[in-house]
Image (cartoon, rainbow, N blue to C red; front, side, top):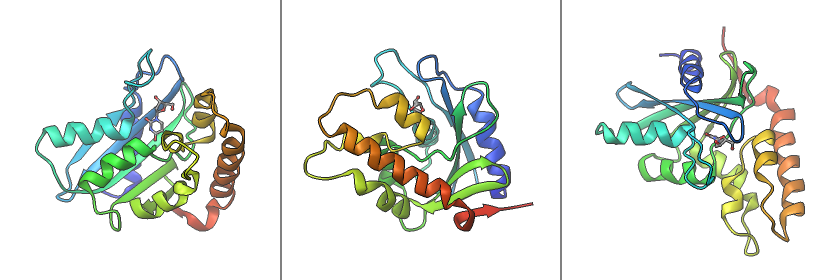
Length: 189
Ligand code: THU
């Protein structure tokens, strides 16, 4: 299966998302080392905390089925009802789940806008990119929200004295990722 096909699988999975609160629906397609695909969508909850991201849904379905070795995951996300996706980076909780089962140097994360435009980073590369949010003053949960501009904006209503600063840093960082997307984005016909 090509990466473009995998992105289409993630798009299919996105249709199953349950997102009455954020309206930000996400789909994921996870591939095992022997080529099996597991789909996942985000499933929200009124209490926010129990919300499960698309990536974890895919991982937990796969692990339940006995899988332990994974090659890559494609992710698509965006506001409900729109076909347009934003590059959607897995949150800190999902990255931690990936760490449990994947080699960070080789596991590939395909963050797709559409089947022709997507950014691929290894788990390690992505983690380095997002870990700028960690420091001794900041609770690590803030970096869990290091996803897309839309996502971060809907989640940034947590009160925190460092929040404004973080928000600025985060938005600049994401801008940098999306503005510089051309050299990093892969185009496939
Ligand atoms: N979400 C995912 O499912 N995966 C991501 O990579 C980013 C965030 C979900 C969580 C929540 O339901 C919604 O998107 C807004 O944050």
